[in-house]
Length: 176
Ligand code: IMP
Ligand code: MG
Image 1 (cartoon, rainbow, N blue to C red):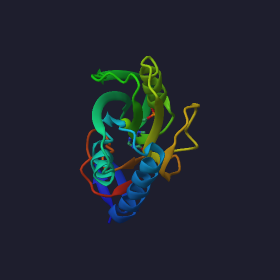
Image 2 (spheres, rainbow, N blue to C red; image 1 turned 45 degrees about the vertical axis):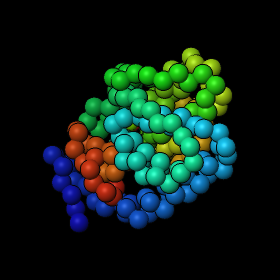
Image 3 (spheres, rainbow, N blue to C red; image 1 turned 90 degrees about the horizontal axis):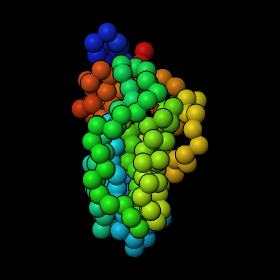
Image 4 (cartoon, helix red, strand yellow; image 1 turned 90 degrees about the vertical axis):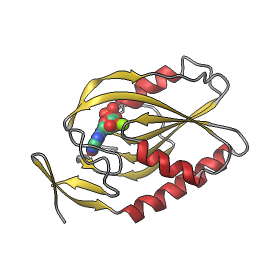
């Protein structure tokens, strides 16, 4: 079924079931990497809220969870500069940090966040993103865990918005 949000039309792209399967896989891989360490999951708001909620339910070992809020998008295009709307409120010294992102597109956001985190002396840093657009990516930060590599087309749902709408959809739609 097509979906209309404001002036745009979207078509179903990835089902809730497929998303769930990839998230379980990522949680298992993270646990295999981290073993008995107690990581800090750093969730990037707003988009990653739904991914983080599901991922962390599957990551059942001891962990800390914290949130940062960054923004680089307006409408369907990235603005290239990242603003920190809600800052890091935890000391990451000697911590194993896992960044939880909804989507890595040009990589501007993840690069800015990595630079921010590297001002702390962390023990390790890995990035988990539900979606990755390889054709749009222009940076060098290693993306350790990827749910879906997707073409360079705008998507909404499962945390991702179009002009603030669509975040609550349990599945993902692609722009028509
Ligand atoms: P980047 O800084 O260009 O990598 O963009 C990252 C941010 O842009 C993500 O965290 C999203 O909030 C947003 N974004 C990128 N691509 C999409 C998309 O296809 N749909 C919705 N939001 C997107
Ligand atoms: Mg985001």
